[in-house]
Image (cartoon, rainbow, N blue to C red; front, side, top):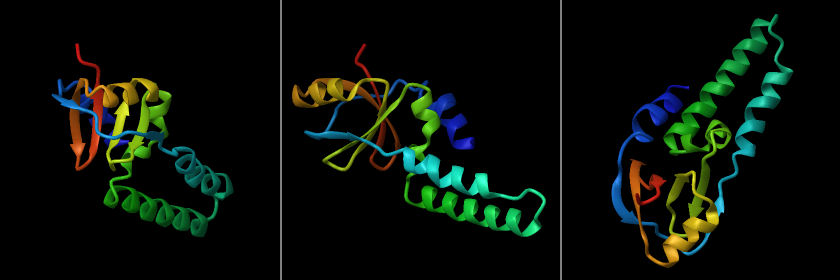
Length: 130
């Protein structure tokens, strides 16, 4: 939850750096797997059982550590609900944007500049050039 607040409070409001989108093909990141990872354990959790609560806490902690250590925090479906597309390029970059995959592909092909906000390593927010 903290990551989402930081994302919207700081990164989305940042102007970004004029740059070009890298890649020739882009595919949507699979955020459905993220949802299933949390829904199944939550639906089977018995809130009256200490053992069930402890096991689910440990499971969510391990999943959280996995997502953070592997820079997978962008897989959060809340971003999709807020209108963002999460696109992975064949060059290994991840782009979070409100632009459609078709527009991102066109901008990459034409080498048109956009504004990129680097979140971490190869994960960027893409904003259209104003």
